[in-house]
Length: 94
Image (cartoon, one colour):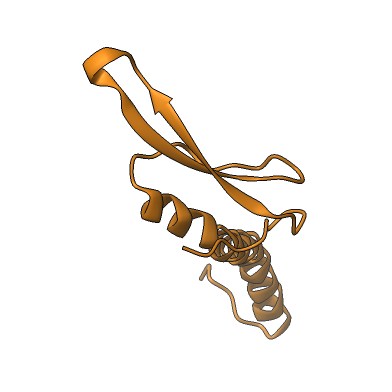
């Protein structure tokens, strides 16, 4: 599965396979990390899931940015609406 470049520094992303546990409890875990800045995913047993999480990282960051921006603008838009309503003679209090 192809890995996209790092969303932070555009460095090369690489897979790491790690063996966790001892004896019969040994489990192979996967992690994707950036060779440039060291950004990485959490470890997971499914290689394809780990790659998908890495490749969608930028999409989630963009979505989070827009949600944060809209949440910040909502109170400002309410205040502006109330002020404009006052200027036009519209009042919420009778």
